[in-house]
Image (tube, rainbow, N blue to C red; front, top):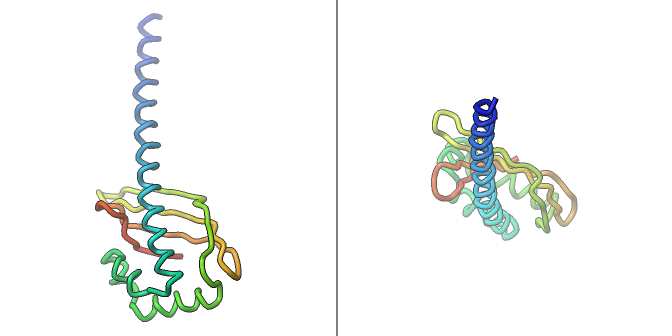
Length: 134
């Protein structure tokens, strides 16, 4: 009986450490992602679409044309106005075959409306880079 209790405690300790590492990783990823999203919003509010595109991941630039993305951002800016505030409402960290992406969801308030924004970021380097914006 004593051995069973020791084994159970050991398993719980290992599981607890794994959960701690996961939560710590999500916390760091969230902070890094929030910083990247803040830069995006600064460029969005200042109508600096070229800076958004140049700071995005190569996968983003090869998927969407600069003109199409600029048109989308202009349309959103005209319809919604500047982003005033927001709060992160979701975070997902995915690793598939060594490729890690970070998905962040924000409940955002703009000048003319409120909405939900989703950012997909390449999380393989030191700084998360934009892959997708929805």
